Length: 82
Image (cartoon, rainbow, N blue to C red; front, side, top):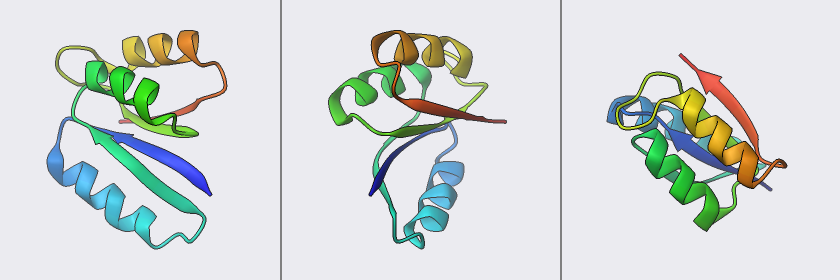
């Protein structure tokens, strides 16, 4: 099972991705973050295999969050969405 964290500042985008990924039997959405800072925190807590990361977000953008996530856990794969 591949553990996925969704990070997007728009709730409708998070919900849409959740709905799409729910149909994949080998994926499990373990959490959702609404900004980069929350993504960093949830990645440390939930240890996802993959983070789906929006690029433009408040508090911390996707590039900054990706750098922090990868520096603390280089095994996490981050897919940036725009």
